[in-house]
Image (tube, rainbow, N blue to C red; front, side, top):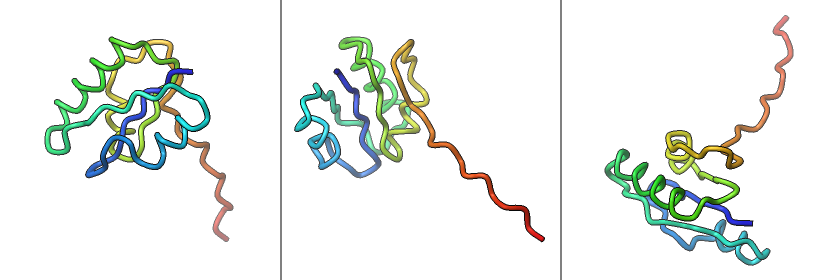
Length: 90
């Protein structure tokens, strides 16, 4: 499976999380995102997506915000974990 992994702010490509995915046999695309220019980070992520057409998009922290702003078509992600229902306050 091809995964586009978008790192968080002040993180770098090749960190623990994308390496973990690679070690389990996935092809991981892990571009360097601009840390100061959010628009440029989106453009970089979109170009990577358009070139490689990954099946899954994963965004960690700020990379998740970037992922929410790219046109990823039918790729899986980004997904938010379900929220736990809170108990009513008595």
